[in-house]
Length: 141
Image: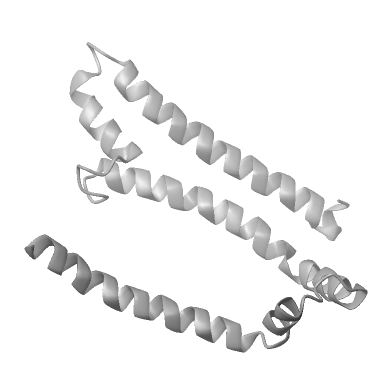
């Protein structure tokens, strides 16, 4: 019962914060929710508006893919140092830290989490570089 009460104490302010954030976002974009509710979201004006916004959001898309890769790598090394998620939660860095003791007898325990970190971060970085080449007009894409 104490565990449930502790989780409720954390969940209620989180839900309130998310509700306030969603309400603020909806209020900051006055035309879009009204357009969607009216069912008139496929007009030519809306498509042109989205194209203009897309042009401004291109660097943001590229930067977010690169930062997402950095966040995964940061979470992995914090987990490896023991500063990440606690043991019931699976985390690649924690898996690598626990597999250090078995590196000589069972190397696959540390190889696979390391390879998944490598492939994920490398894939996201390559995706970000490819998106930058395609979306950046200055590089000829």
